[in-house]
Length: 259
Ligand code: IPE
Ligand code: IPE
Ligand code: MG
Image (cartoon, rainbow, N blue to C red):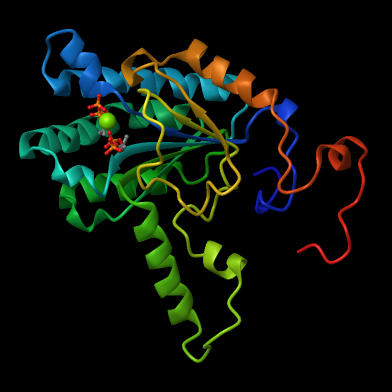
C-alpha cells in the first residue's frame, strides 16, 4: 500500500499532503454523559457515532491509517459494570459494522493483549481481520487492552527469541519490526479529545516524532469538521526531526554521518 514502511524519524513527510496515519485517544465520553445527567456508559454508546464520522472523514481526506485507542491496559481499573459495558459495546459494534467496513474497503486490525478478552470477542476480531485483510482504502486499527509499555516489552521478547544467541548490537529497526503496529508507518498526527494533555500509555515508541494535537472537544462531539480542523493544524506545521528550518527550506542535505 503506497510508500513502504519508513521510520518517520528519518524521512520527512510533506505535511501539506496531510497525514497518512492519524492516531486518536478518544477521551471524554464519561464527562459528555454526566453533563447531560446520563450514566457514563451513555457517553460510550454515543462515542460510536463519532468513530463512524471519523472513519468517513479519514477516507475523504485520504488518510491511509487510522488508529483508535478504545481501551487501555489500565482501564480494567474501572468499575466492573463499565468494563463489561465497554466489552459488549465493542462486540456489538463490530458485529453490526463489519459488513459496512468491508464494503467500504477498510482493513480492520486490533492491537493489544487479547488474552483477557472473551473467546467469542477474540474469535470475531480474528474473523474480521481475516475477512478484511485484502482491503486497501483505509487501515482501521483498534487498540484494545493496549499499553505502550506492554507493546515494547512484547516486541523485545520476540526480538530476543528470534536470535537467541545474540547478546548485543540490536537496532531500533529490529525492535520496531516486532511492535504490534509494525504494518503501519509511525503516526503523523496524534489527537486527544477531552482536554487532558497526556499520552496515557498509548503508542509510546511510535509517537517519538508525531505532531500532537489536543482539543477540549469531548469525543462524542468530535465529528468530520473537528477532524478537519486537526488536519488543518497539522498541514501548517514544519516537521524537522532534529534539522534546522533553513535546511528544510533550502533543500540542503543532511550532514555526513547522520544516522
Ligand atoms: C474515554 O472516555 C473512553 C474510554 C476510556 C474507554 P472516558 O470514559 O475516559 O471519559 P471521561 O474522561 O471520564 O470523560
Ligand atoms: C485513555 O483514556 C484510554 C482510552 C481513551 C481508551 P483514559 O480516560 O482512560 O485516560 P486517563 O487514565 O485519564 O489518563
Ligand atoms: Mg477519560
